Amino acid sequence: MKELLGLLAVWSIVLSGLALLAGVALIKRGKRVWHHRAMLTGTFLALLFLVFYLAKWALHGTTAYGGPEAWRGAYYFLLITHTLLAALNGPLALYVIWRAFRGEFVLHKRWAKVLVPIWLYVAASGWVIYLVLKRYGVETGTIAF
Image 1 (spheres, one colour):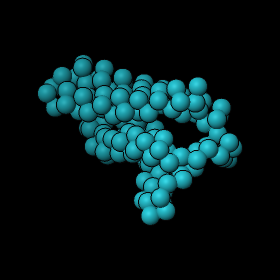
Image 2 (cartoon, helix red, strand yellow):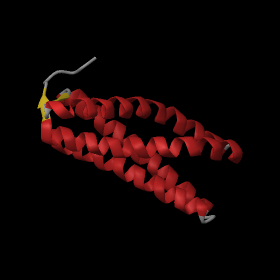
Image 3 (cartoon, one colour):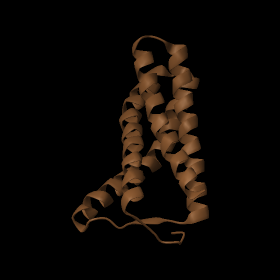
């Protein structure tokens, strides 16, 4: 079950990032309806990621880094920046979506230019973190609070 939840989480966030890229390409081509659909799909997939990740965390606890010592600093830099930007990503995404639904496209576009790189970094770094912990993770058996 733990492996399945981990796979579902990582694939949902990666697909979320791909939907985001599709949405950006669609709006640049003037396809507003399809842009809207792609972005809501990406948002839904990001929400699914959160559900799968929290379920895995609640049921199985945390996994610590146990890889080469020379990589520890780089791994923790990636993890910390990923975590901080992921925490920012959710509220910022809701703000950008809210502006779009209200028809405030100037603000929507301005903040989307901030959101998109953050979202893509979170999606890509989440995938890298998953791969690193799959290879070098050490089960702690505890839930970190």
